[in-house]
Each structure stands twice: as C-alpha cells, then as structure tokens.
Amino acid sequence: MIEKRKYRIAELTEIKTDPEAIISGAMDEEIRNRMMITIETEGPILEPLLFKRVINSMSLKKVGSRIEPVFRRIASSLSCTMTTEDGSCVFHNGKDENFFRTAENSDRYSYQIPISEAVKCLQYIISKTAHSMTKKELGNRFRDELGYERMGSQVDILFTKAASSAEIERYGNGRYKPVEY
Image (cartoon, rainbow, N blue to C red; front, side):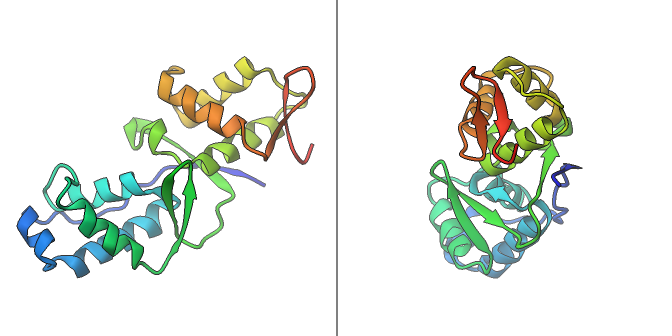
C-alpha cells in the first residue's frame, strides 16, 4: 500500500568554505558525507536538489560551472542506487519507496520531485476512490495531495509526465485508472 508522508529535509550543519577549496579536492570527503546524509534522509532525490542541499550547507548559493564537475565526480562514486528519470539522475537510499511526500512550506518545488514519486501519488489517489477519474479531477487531487495551492505550469508538467507512466492507465473514454485496477 502506498503511503503519504511529510517531506523531511536533511539536517546538515552549515560550514564556511569557498569554491577554491571545493575545486582543489580538499572538501571531497566532506561533500561525499553530506551527499550520503542527504540521500539517506531525502531519497529518492533528484541530482539538482541533492547538489543544492549540499552546496547551501557549505555557505554557497549554487553549484556553478566550476564546481559541478567536482560534485558529479563525487556523486558518481557514491555507494547508492542511481536511476535516470526524464534525463535526470535520481539517487535512492535503498529503502522501501512505496510512498510519496508532501511539499509543505516550499521544502521542494514540483520540478524537484522524481517522476516515480509523482506516479505513486497518482496511484494513491486512484486507489482511494471508488471510481475512475477525469484528467481534471485527477490533476486537482494530485496538486492538493502534494501540497500545492494551484496547478501552475511546473505542477502540470509533473502531472502530465506521471500520468503518462506505464503504471497509470486510461480507459477508452479518457478516464484514469491504476494498472492493477
């Protein structure tokens, strides 16, 4: 059974560093540890959000073009499962992933949610109703379950990608149903 959970952000102690220390390789082990803590807490997590969490914990605002290769090199050496969804790398913590998480208080934006997690949300919604749903009904419930106030373009893009998954089927009349219906 699919669960609805509250999204938890990894608690990383903020440290002061500069881009030169990261580029030199002096911070590699610290970065690796922070990535693993973040994956353990927030997994499955998309690569851009993982990098953002770690760089922000190091008193820097973004992973720029000089730091990105360092982060990618370190991330590729991590001992965790990595998959690709819609061209983005997703890091998994190896635990049960039969859940989706709400995005309260802007903990993460809709473009930071893995498609596989959005599919779980749709399956949860459909399994809780006694009937199939129209695209509009399902979209509104999807938005509400994830904790967004309105169906903006990014939420709509995530919904469309998730609804197109092989794990979600449509009847001939266009209404949605889960595969195991």
